Structure formats: C-alpha cells, structure tokens
Length: 344
Image (cartoon, rainbow, N blue to C red):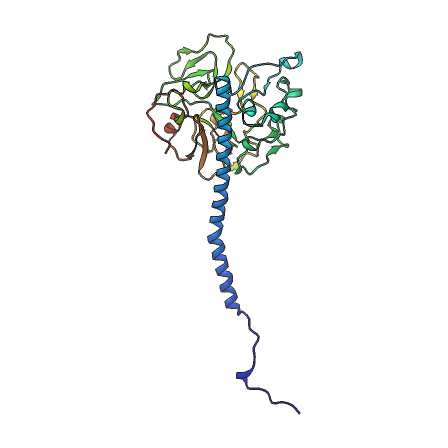
C-alpha cells in the first residue's frame, strides 16, 4: 500500500547557496583580498628595505674599519699594475672600493679568490671570484639576476652589486667649486681622484703638475669638514638607461658592473665603475650618453620613491626621489662649507 505524500510544509529541502548568495560571498572575498594585498606588499617591502639597510651598515662598517686600519677610506680604483709582464699592461683594475673592504666585514674568502695581478683582457674577465655572490652587495628589492651571464659585453658579466660610492658633485651654487680631475671627476667626495685638473667654473688649474698620474684616493674622515653625519659615503645604484621616445628600459645589467671589477685604465683617466658623481637626483630617468658618461649617472633603487645611503659616520638614511638637487649635492661633498641641517 502506498503511503500518502507528506504536505509541502513537512518536506525537507537540501540546503545550499543561491547564485546571488554565492556572488555576494565572492565579492566579499575579493574586497578582503584587495584590502590585504597592499598591506602584504608593504610588509614585504619593509622587510626588503630593512635588509638593504643592513647591507649598507655592513658596507659602511667595512669602509670605516678600513679607514681605521689604513688611515683613509679605500680608493674607488687603484692604478697598481700586475707583477708579471703579461698583466702589467692590462687595462683592468680589481682593487677598488668594494674589493678592498671585503676583509673588513668577514668576506676574506672572496677577497682571496681575486687574482689582483691579472689585468689584461684575456685573464682579468675570467677571475675566479667573478661569479661569487656577496649577499651584502645586493639589495633584496633588486628583481634581476644576482649573477649576470648573458650580457652582451663580457665585462658586464659576473656577480652583481647594487651599490656605489659617492664621488662628490659640482653644485651650481652654494658651495666652493671643486677641482675637476681629468676634466671630469670632482675631487670633493669621499672617494675621488688625484692628479692635474682645473677648478670648476673658472678654468684655473689645481691639483698636481701636468704629467702626474691620475690615481684613485680615499678620504680621511677628518677631511670631512662638512661633518661625517652630513656626507654621503655609499648609496644604492642600479641604473638602466631609459629611452623616453620608445618608453623602454635598457635590458639588465644596464650600466651596472660586477663587484670584482673596479674599472679600467683604457686611457690616462680611468673609468670608475663603482663611484658616481652626484649630478642628478636619485632614480632620474636618463641615459648614459645624455648624462655625460658612466660616472655621472644617477644613484637609485627599486624601493618605491626612495634610495638608501650610508653616511660617513656609518648611519643609514633614506632619500626621497623628490629631493631638491642642490640640497642633495650638498650632502655629496665633504668640504663645500654649505649650511645644511638634516636630510628632508
């Protein structure tokens, strides 16, 4: 016998979301993700910036320990040649700012790998330390390869470095005009060149007699007349040319060079790879040609709107991209005599 069908009110229906309810839940999840994602990204960038600060502190300590031991900061590049006939005439230099401080912050192993006296093109660019990554030399925000192996020029390949020393500046006003060594490098930074030159702006001679070799030099801390707390020592540098008409960036490594090469002496005036003249504010979109050369390219970073620097006293500061150029340049010179307080 068939049982009677229960009334509709007593039937049990399977529970579940309606389409409208499902869409509402998805929308709420989307809103939450939209709210949380910027916070997560900000937290990650904060961690990367803290890591970069620590890198600069390590580099700063390396420079200051070197100065304590050698009575001056390391030169940006040396003019010493090799001990063998084959390498004595080589143009490349490996002794410079970032190689010389390695023993002073527990990187003696990397320093010992360097073949300092192999300077010709056949041997210098295949140094055993070429691909040795120094973790303190790469900012965590740098998104490209830590070791470059596919660059068009062999001297661009090797372990990266995202930092460079301060090579002074030629401010238009507000400070004493520096000497331009080799007609290009100002001599008023923590890392500079010595040799014959002219005073910027008036053409009178300065420096050593004509015929004197142009060599790298490092500043004594006591020479920072503007104050060690008010002078940049090392900052972030990861410049790639920006082509305005095409709206394109140059491929990595751009104008960066591996840490193991300090530069070259193709002529009497060297190309210094890891010391920069402060003629443009950080992260300025510029090309090497329009800037006037490798040493005039702007400092910069992959941190949003700012670049990190370690001062000559070892403290680390951040500089906003919008900083006024003249103020920025005043902090790049050791003896300009400018009246400046703190970085904005």
